[in-house]
Length: 142
Image (cartoon, rainbow, N blue to C red):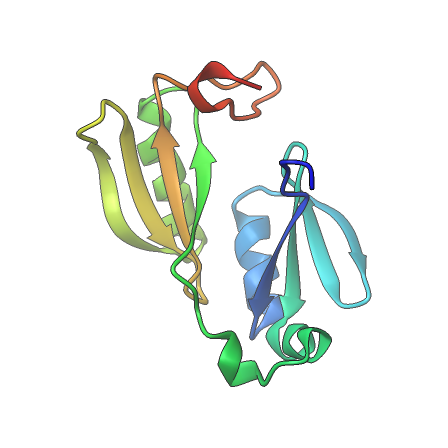
């Protein structure tokens, strides 16, 4: 298996609310088919899919999907951008869980929760500069 995440699918209860949230962040849909709304993420795709359909596809009861201990990361090029992105998320309907703050390891980050509870970290990591196209590079690799 190659080291790659190609698609992140969020099981959502209200696809209209959730797509409106990501649209309000300024994200552009790349496709909508078979009940999935997709957004390009520079080399990956974020898909929104009705949670009941996701459970059916996996073969699990919807209550067994739960809500995992998972965060989605969005890295920015400059420290000041963290607060800007958090404010945009709040304006779109997110709940701020942790405002922008310095981190013990030398970075700067904050957290928000989208309208259905998915948690996003917005971070500036001075040791992992973004590529010119905005792609994240852990410790400068990639």
